[in-house]
Image (cartoon, rainbow, N blue to C red; front, side, top):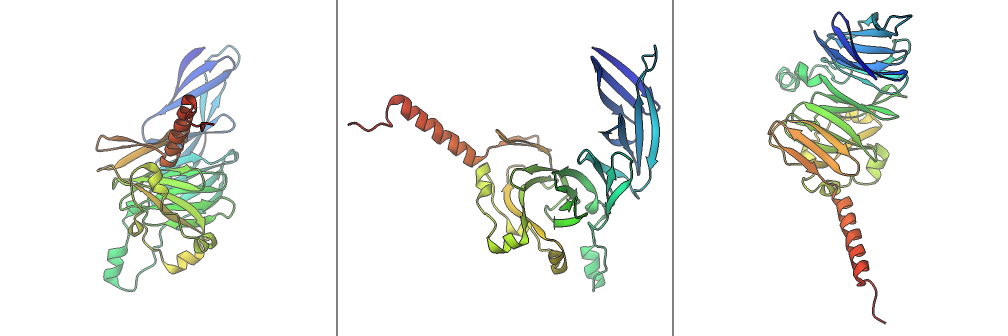
Length: 315
């Protein structure tokens, strides 16, 4: 096993070599905000408005040094790139400060799709109303992505958007999912999504088809599974009727985890252990799945009764 440093202008690559495989971590500076690995021994770096494709070239002959070659610069974004993630083996996605989302091909580095309609800048009827409703530029910044096999979920300003990879369009949204910018999102099982915000809130959402939504009411008790919280219907402001008709699905608020008093920066979800949130108020909170914990307690109780012989009635 060997550790080596390689440098090319503003890119450092620290390689850990295990037998014939190279596992590398890239340390960057001078304006590179995000980095991912893509096929063909390449990495993509986000630098301002640009995406730069670098290729790692293995040593040849007696040389032990790796080369870092700049392959291409992609200049399709109009503003600084804030988010960059791999979606699957064939695609990666980027999001910018002005709400542009671009889906890229990982093999030929071309644009597969583009979405710039997260914010509708159409003028209002009344000038004063337009001033009140107009969003600030940071309200449409794409702060974070998560994804599954079908969709990309985007945290855009204060809202949440679901972009379907096959349909190449937004299929659901909550423009005001929080009172301030959404900082981090992640998927939960059963088509659910969790989000946290600068306003100190942590909320759980469910992606529902609108036919299903009309046929049966959204559940109201899920949040109790996490021990704290309440469903706040006011948190989910109605969107315009034409937007409702344009999207086949809806993001329904099903849980509101109340416990932090300041900006919730991030969280981690553990399927077997629950949810951990951290915030600027210096608190780390572990949220347990109440239904799961209740089941475990019942199981332990029955096991204890069985051990003591109390489960069997006297003959």
